[in-house]
Image (tube, rainbow, N blue to C red):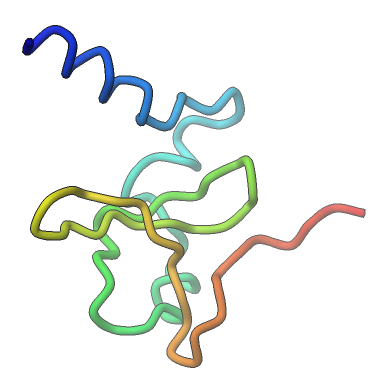
Length: 84
């Protein structure tokens, strides 16, 4: 039973990025992003997700921990500029 649970939850993890590991590491976000972030978000768990170029943080709820987009006080997602 425990083995099946571990196999099931392993599929929910974000795979490691192929780019710069240090830039995408948990908690390694620029000061300007910290300054833009709304309060009540766990900045210590924030990371840049290369798939969408946005910053996400871990929200620990009563049942599970979920990645949630890091947002500004007005509700906008905090993302890097996309290359054209």
